[in-house]
Length: 72
Image (cartoon, rainbow, N blue to C red; front, side, top):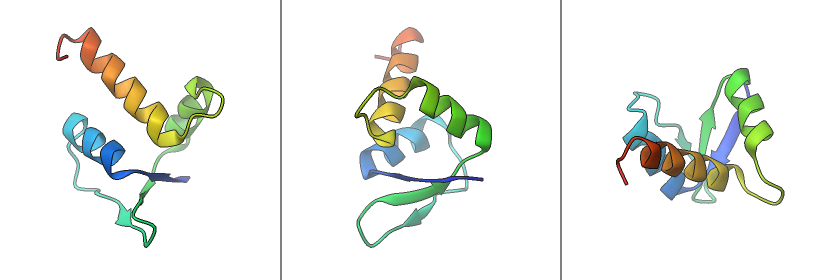
């Protein structure tokens, strides 16, 4: 399973959208390391825009999803 490094903001949105016991590991850089499954990894790379970080991609997808559900 692949690891990703994400920002605090991204981690907070993920935790709000997908409550889980797996909080990841805080790195010395201040980012978080999370293990994701291969399918999620492939989907992120498919929808990730050129020059966009993994964190920004995840944040964009969560905001769009919340907007479609009427939460924003």
